[in-house]
Image (cartoon, rainbow, N blue to C red; front, top):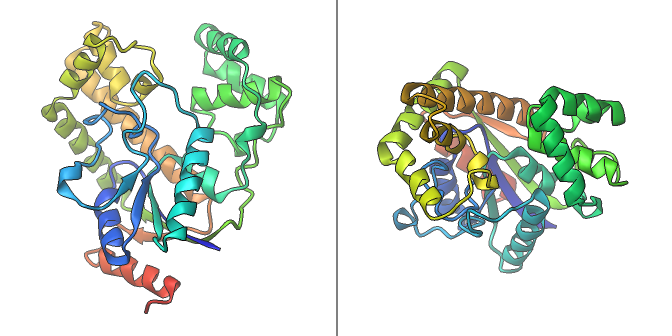
Length: 304
């Protein structure tokens, strides 16, 4: 059975620092499970690692242009291939990130290959969402699949549209996001901390992104022809700055919205991952957290 370590937790909690310690200790290579770090040129707003600061090999970062689209099915196919190849070389893959559906595509019994894709249907659903709002789409989905609330992030319009697209195209109802698979010898680790202090970290990180030049990063992307409605620019941080640049938000309101939306995203991530009983949780604020995690992994791998 292939070995796999996963490190997850909400945005802003400090997964990168811990992941580098794990990778150094166990000679891992890291596979990013972040749906925005796949894009080239989106660096500041995605808090992308500076590869000049580490010699740890990373995968699934900077793999497509900012004008391209990328699905969870694409991630699943590519990540599983990397996991397989690394295990063949006796290298332990370490998946790191907070995009719940990406991680679920590896550790749950999800088959996206059965999902039909109809561009015309997607366009119609997107138009309905713009015209009638997210609640309309959610009610439509729940009428077709009453169990969808257990399997789909109903606050995420893109996920709701994708679930509707699958059903209305004649595919299966939404995948069962709670059916574990046993594909891997899995070590599943989660980071948590006091909610109020996590929110403080998130707010501080947003300020740092602005100071580093987030607005200029987005201006440059737009100046080079990237369309405002590109999938890559729908990320938190990018969409608010675009609204500011278009005169729809004041500077202060832009920063307020980025912080608020980032906190809400963190809350959804916590709820998402708390459902998985396989995750071993560690308090990010514990002074000895690195040793705790290293010892836990060592014991699971039989090294200690």
